[in-house]
Length: 172
Image (cartoon, rainbow, N blue to C red):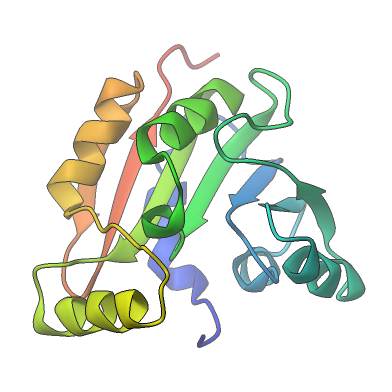
């Protein structure tokens, strides 16, 4: 995977209605997004091997299932899910868990690949060819998932990749 570009996430992070101090990089694997964001980011993933690589790079890690996050309610300011939602076994449950973990005024940022583009269809076909079982949302479907989890969701950009952000109501 190419290095993560913080500029892709900056407009979404700016939607937070609170200071951003604690970031959870959900489905963060080896920590490429957490590294790009810097600061106090925790890489959360189910894969011990990927987390070991993130830990070796000095990142804080948490092995957890996206369907039942091992984090307290309202304990993080931002949850980022970059190039990972399509791998989650229960996307709506994972989004609801991310919303639960957010403090009021916090933001969930999802950046993923659009299945309706030519490159998106090729990516989906390639992942299926390798037995990944990926299921891709459109940007609007992703925004609907965030809305259903109680977040104020909006689509920020679309193309081969899209960004959807949802703010948890009740900012301090």
